[in-house]
Length: 332
Image (cartoon, rainbow, N blue to C red; front, side, top):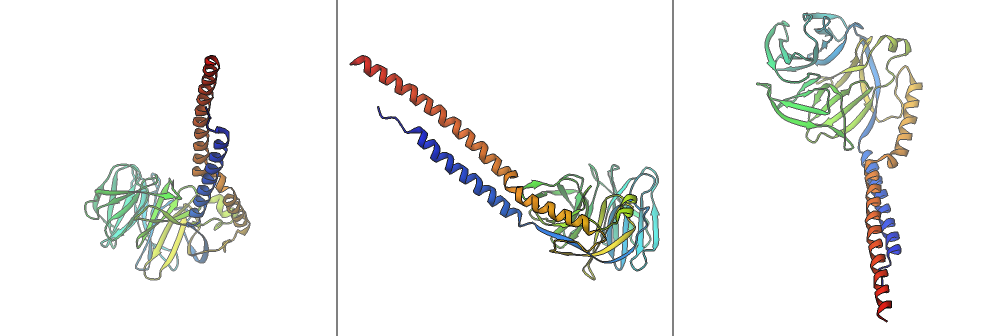
């Protein structure tokens, strides 16, 4: 009885699967390059009240509107964009922890963290004219032409009706196929959403139709060492529709920054040493990404499973071959 040449077949299959796994991982690495890496360039600064725990930021008709959080410190502010002076303020009572802020139909909508209610303010008088109910945590919010987009600290963005505030859809946000949690303060620009990623110096640009991250913006190094010691995390991104300018700030930060986003390796900022280290780390990440790829790992696991199956088949064939030889010898 002629036996299947198993060892040679195993070698061929292993080489084929190994090449397939490497090619898949390389393809994954190539796909990752579709996420553009942008850096922040500071164009201008104005003073920001560094006692403000910034939760939401937007621009309307030449003014900055800011939501601040924490129990006993939550407020809504109207800020002069030329001087940074606070021209109007509404202070919440101690039971409210305010969160994200957006604008719609000449009204400001301010979320709360755990109270399951959004306050609707008249933008001119700062009077509360309505409340909107929802379930779950409130983090960030912005307005598109057909719905509100709202974050809750996960990788999901909720789409809510502009009138009833009912949840009408959910978008899962991923970066190269990996979910991105801690989506925080939001800014809607056309069909995209800019989101701060909580506890990082990253702002991501999200295609609302697919949930895919298309751009990753590095906002590291805007504060010098002494400023950083007094401040907390980046939080607050606003787009001026009239001038097409972006403004960003953070919790307890000393400034609002007018910025542009550029495809550069370094940031024009007060702390370039940190930025250089960041660039070096990014290059190391690129080099190791092929071997860290989930797809590559899954391919290797598949190879191992195939090897086990082939080994079992080979073992059975050997046993059957030996039995046949014994029987033929006995027959002779």
